Image (cartoon, rainbow, N blue to C red; front, side, top):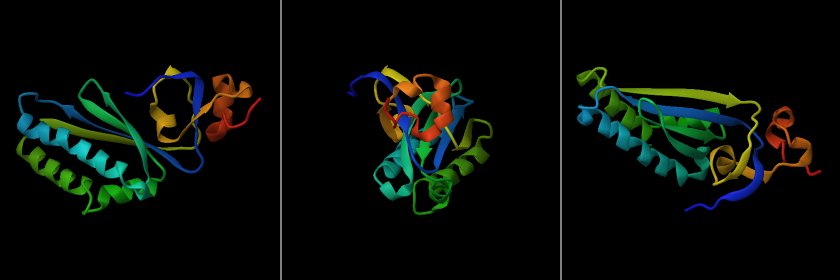
Length: 165
């Protein structure tokens, strides 16, 4: 189990940053024959991405929304995200094809959604938490005195806590 990191911290990251939300919405709970394969597909993709440093995948957080599970993913490049999504030899493309076949047989039983954000600047604060979110995917750094407040961290974007003072 991860330990709690005391103090006030933020993330630090240089380069392109993509935040990708992807999830499923279970609309017909009584149709596990349709939604269970979708549910099982994501862990295989996350394992595949987690062991391939060149994929551009930085990390993820698993969450539960009102309609079902979803994942917040962090990527180093929009191009690498799209390359993974369209590569037939990787887990995603075959899973997407299976989903489309199942969805045609049972329309509306399960939904899939995603949102993609290309992040120019991001502000974050983590006070006495276990590793999570942006600093888990990038770098966790202590908040410097000049970045004690959110507006200051947001103005400086990626390097909010790197300076000391």
